[in-house]
Length: 60
Image (cartoon, rainbow, N blue to C red; front, side, top):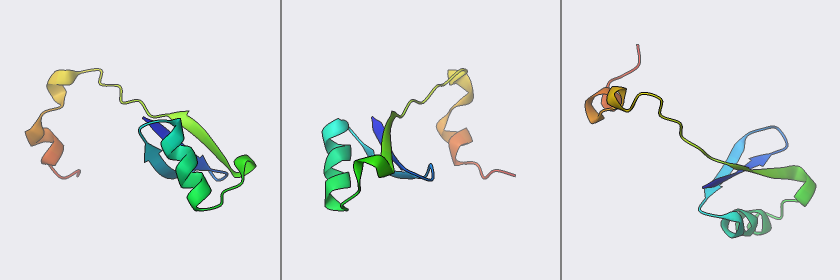
C-alpha cells in the first residue's frame, strides 16, 4: 500500500500501488511537486494486544 500525501503532509489517498496513486493525482490535476508517495506500513509489536474486542473499545 502507498499513501499520497499533499504538500502539507495530509494523507489524500491510499492505494494498492504507484499506478493507483498517480491516477488519483491525475484525476485531481495535482502537480508532481505538490504531492509525495510514501509506503503505508502497519507495525504490530504485540499481536496479542490487538484483538477484535480491544479494537472496538472506545478510547478514554
